[in-house]
Length: 419
Figure (cartoon, rainbow, N blue to C red):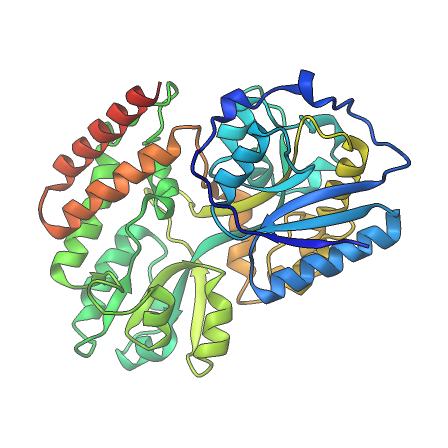
């Protein structure tokens, strides 16, 4: 029977993963001991629905295989805690791995290469699988679920302003112009569109604007594409003129979902995580979900995904592989239905008829063409610099060009300092 351990780790030191690759000392032989069929699984704290779904799906796995799973819930600083566990040669057999930090773990050599151990890999949405591949093209984790961005339209406010959903443009440039016109028909305190200014929401738009902010050498680039600068300028112009607003700064709301639910915003580009709040907290709001707008004629959206990774030095390789394949295979429908998350296998999404659900259809379709929120080991530094400097442009302290040049210089200086 599985045990659940809640761990609160306070770290005074953040160990370097580069020093953790020590297969020679841990004694891992890559095979399971048939007399000790148990594994450890490290996860972060989740919602009650996700926690219950995890426990129930793990129980199904235990009943089917006879392999015990000890779930360890790390309450705080999950990535630092896992890094420290590797340094202490006490890594869990299996753990959650956010695609955002996956390149760091892959490059450090602490993860098991599972390329040849995945069952029916073609059944996964390939952008999700690609998020966990290394520069060598090999696979180091399997995606357990994901979210994508889509365009939410408050149809009550839209119709009050004299428009229908059919009037909402499907391209970013048209959407901006529509928001500008729509704003003139709204009441004070309402925004035609709300936005999130962090880079995590805009990487796919940058790619569609011929800009990869993370160059092949890992350095930052925010200035080489005029299309990308124009895209950012359209957001700044919208905020300056009052038709694309920040829910926190301009509307005094905690987040976009609250602004949308409270009928303070007509349009928002958000992830499917907003659905539970809309249904529970704002059940009277009527809305329609459309694809994220095209940018420069290209379909684009962001994908946020988490995978199951296996420690390279695990002494329970076979059991760990069986667990990961079960949770992303036979057990995935149970997990997805219980947790309310989206399945990463196409066949499971089809069994659950998700593309027939008007709330989920566009989010599921986005998994086919979206851009995962991951792009090399320097992305965390580069995205932090963007977030810092783009805010200066939104505040009016810098022009977009000045802000992006400053972000590029700030990120590259920090990357060079860390090398």
